[in-house]
Amino acid sequence: MLIVLLRQYLRPYRRLLVVLIVLQAVQAILNLYLPNLNARVIDDGVLKGNTHLIWGLGGQMLAIALVQAGFAVAAVFLGARVAMGFGRDVRKALFARSIRFSAREVNQLTAPSLITRLTNDVQQVQLLVVMCCTMVLAAPVTIVGGVIMALRQNARMSWLLGASAPILAICLGLLISRLIPQFRMMQERLDGVNQVLREQISGIRVVRAFVREPHETRRFGRVNDNLTHTSLVAGRLMAGMFPLVMLIINGSNSAVVWFGADLIAHRSMTVGSLIAFLTYFTLILMAIMMSTFVVVMAPRAVVSSERIKEVLDTETSVTPPSNPIRQFRTPGTLELREVSFGYPGADALVLEGISVAAGPGQTTAVVGSTGSGKTSLVNLVARLFDVTSGAVLLGGVDVRELDPDLLWHRIGLVPQRPHLFSGTVASNLRYGRPDAPDDDLWIALEIAQAADFVLAMGGLDAPITQGGTNVSGGQRQRLSIARALVRRPDIYIFDDSFSALDLQTDARLRAALAPYTADATTLVVAQRVSTIVNADQILVLEGGRQVGLGTHESLRQTCPTYAEIVASQMASADAA
Image (cartoon, rainbow, N blue to C red; front, side):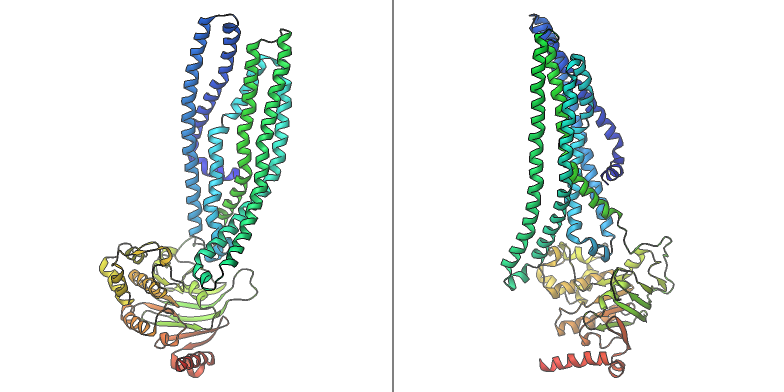
């Protein structure tokens, strides 16, 4: 997965990578040339007292070192540029894929895990790319060139290279085989920490209201301890890696000096050649050690790349049609034909055999007990899910055949849990219609009974925090309703959007809403019968089945479920 991901997202940077490889190769070759000059300085200059040669060769070494430094700086700059561009592109692709997911895929992958993959997992792979570009690209040149140059100095000690490199490779291989499962577990447990933390921050009011701080502290402590334990196991393995590498390098250097001194004593090797061989030997093993940095990062990057590819390879269950229809046959109409819906793997259907039709100027209400499938029905109309069987028709066309942009531009959805984005009142209202003038915003606020509190907050430029936490639940609902009104869609969908309003505000809003939406089709999901008593038709759901369809008065006579709902609410009102 890692190779596939790198090949796909590094392709746009092929030219930079070629330049980077050249820069790294040149600076590695220059670095390999320096020990050879140093050997000549010792053998032909220092030992023979040739000061002129020392100055000449020293000047060459200084010039080469400066050029090498310039190439190295340029290589690091380009490497960082490639790595940062890679990370940006992967995050962009992950976000683009995630934003197209239906609720089914989001529930399957979970929001905390998606956030972790978009941030931490991408960072792990990006860090590997940085290490490869800045450290490892020069390693093969250093290793191969170092072996050749070392053999030129003295071929009799080549067996030391043949012994040290395999030992180093075997030790690193054993450590890596134990690191990969630890890193995989670490990323999964990081998901768990994010999930618990996200729940606790979002539900901080509930936690405090029920005095559950100690319980939530222990709950977070458990997932945090699990992550800590896994991190410690991986950390101990990583901590043992570098001392082991240094032990092999230093032991090998000691062996070079030991056997080299014997060769010098028998005049089979010069002092300068020994110093050069030792330098080449150290450069080779140091290149292997630098590769160890990548070896350390590779297991975690492999795990992260698998998690990234899982998101990128997950197709949304709400797929766009291959030949989308971009025109309605009967604009403004809505029809459900024998609609059934069930979640994958579920034993029973959530909705079964629902049939209802509505046209422009009509209001269709949906009522039923909790869990009867009201919100699922609304999600099918907006195509947040696709039906299991049957069809949802908008403007006379199956929504699965419509251009998704056309579908969503013609629907104004006010969800059951209204969500506001950080920004201002105006930026939230213009979310579905960016070019809407201020006058249209104020009209929508007046209809939604939100103008008064928006004025008190400071007008359209009043700040809104993330999720709209600086306004009350009822105010969030009214701003969400105003946002849908600004869009002026063909179909309005209100998913229990009046539940947080008091009865007087509810009545005023519905009275103001009626003339504004007179030419549109309106679908209202409601708990309060008073909200939908004047609807043109009311769809009654029970256990996911359609048990009634008609007006308020006719259903009271013909639908026991609806009559029971009305009676229970009237009894509650009398008791109050």
